[in-house]
Length: 230
Image 1 (cartoon, rainbow, N blue to C red):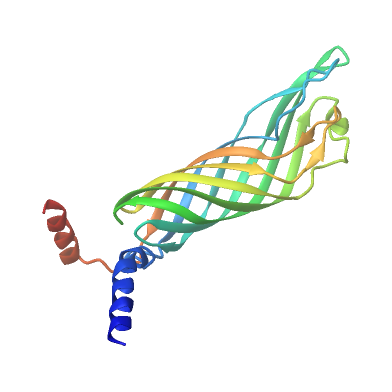
Image 2 (cartoon, rainbow, N blue to C red):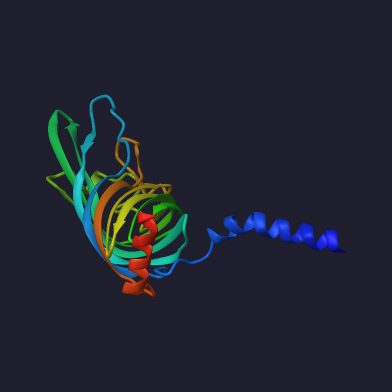
């Protein structure tokens, strides 16, 4: 029995540093506001004979709320809810005449990034990871001259529901977070007149101000700084 007790104690001692990485840090549970710019398109457009349809990026923006699911020494997770304006600027030669089409989309979006690696302290750290997003397109419009009605072969408008992969990398400094995110849609939103499929794809750069539920006092901060000096 004594040997068993000793073995259990040694096991607990050996895994204690690992388990400590999953304990919430004093600043876990931050929430805040974010806003930024979005550069988007509706997927790779095929180059077809007699059309030559191509695209350039559409510049939009995003505003929303962000909250931490958890924050430990090595990991963190976030959840987002936002309003986003995105789309695609497409152009090509159709029947020997130039045609330009701007697809303008307005949507409500939710994102969850449950697993991100974190490096640094609670006050200053970098992080990167990923998750999934879902988006509801509640308003869409096509700005074109003469060809807008026939741009989508699959119907008058794109599908309203979108979802896909979300990748995130950012840096946290005190109450601010500067973040880059890339999102790749999995849903086929519609088909163009040339047979190519529209899928959302965009990158964003945002700045957040986080309201931190801080249990760390100035005394704790001084102790932390002294610990770093040692």
